[in-house]
Length: 226
Image 1: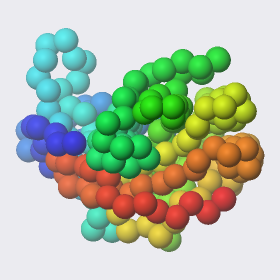
Image 2: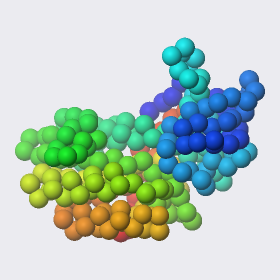
Image 3: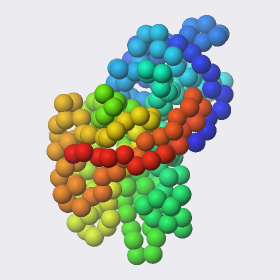
């Protein structure tokens, strides 16, 4: 995935989870934060960031916050990008062949899953999670409690018991991590549900990404340690 109209800026503050105050070459501006997670270890005053400009008159703000630098590394925090990265990764022959049919936002039971895959007799419901939290080389998810995430995991177990393939794909929006772990400290229920899903035959996968200020793409599989 590649972005257009990317500008470097400096993060100043985050009055609420939807907006940030940033400094650009045009002066101080309000920016939409495309990630409702906490991102406390990333969005620090003075942090180097990259924003996307869109001057549509229909928008409340002209900017979207796309990426942030942490310890010299660019981390993508756009919560809308993991599904697109996952679809590109799958179409490149991962999980299924390049002939796979991919259907986004497909409902099963009481949940709507990010992707539904079909190839021959194989059918799979797949939930995609973007990961931006890294601690000492370990990627962790979630960075805030997510009851919706737990609900999706439990529905994937139902899918698996009904005979479908089922999986969770963590898109780690950075490089440099050695493994992914559930963030039991922040949301132990999510970790418990994830381990129950693995025991039920749900595939738990993680892939890191090559990230620049204006691009992001899946790179290699990362160990998941439950």
